Image (cartoon, rainbow, N blue to C red; front, side, top):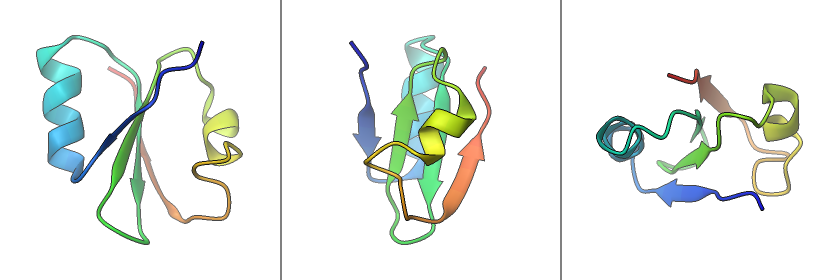
Length: 64
């Protein structure tokens, strides 16, 4: 099962990833201020074609 977490800001997503040692990819949307944390085993190609991000522009912050 794929678990996605949605945050109001990029900093909130980074803090969560760091504090919980989850690793993973963060998609930062250009359309609004949301940031979506994807599990580390999801490939970037799949992130940009996922229903929650498809058609949106944004940046992908690498896995830790």
